[in-house]
Length: 339
Image (cartoon, rainbow, N blue to C red):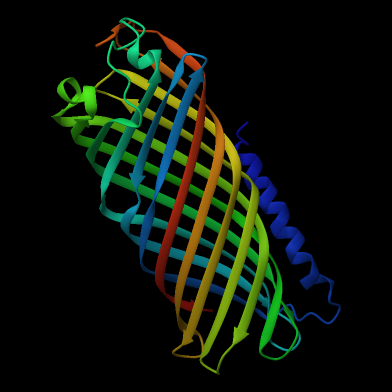
């Protein structure tokens, strides 16, 4: 069951407060030793988000997978707060990064379908009346327009084991929303599906929206390489990742909604180059993987005529096995200032 967004935000807020407690527990803490941060800059996102559905019984089954590309230029804004220990070293940090895409993104929506058993070989209306064809039956590609927004709230606390090395707990909340408009489909049918399922259609094909909510915990490691250069690594994991999506097949008059939960892990590497006492560049690379499972519901809001019969408007199918997953690589270059 999907955890509501406000609940996950509350959990992340409690986590941030818990991480901040050690900084206030030091009796000699200098309350004036605090800094704010602000930064901005470009970036790039690659990867994909996909859902894979399946339904099987004793007579066979159906599978379908839609893979949406995440290839786009980003623009990011970042703000934060840093408190220092009595030695002037960074202790508690909290930052919020918001990223959105510039342009429409690139790549193709890839849609694959598999059928087996009587869904293939049975006579209409319950089957297609075609010879069995193991493997991929139908594949299509469509142009996409992408709108991406991502928020990452992250906090960490440093225990300095030497003047140049620190480590400590890290945690936060990632919230992502991706919206796609797909157009101009080109479809190929294989084997007995080639004659009736090969062709193309211009114009709108579908709209798709997916939202990921990921509260996470992990380890933060920081190291000074020189007076002007330092590096940090964050490794995080979440057993509370969740996803919600809506796929509106406008050509078919069918809307599918999914609700899933699962896990996620991330690795972030950050390099900082100081160009002045309070101005620096941040080069940040991140790998994020999300794996969730749940169910999908399909509803026809318009009657659809198919090769196996007519599906009336109002028809609903529930309990379809659903996997919503994503793999993402991002790189950003931010100009930051402490004040």
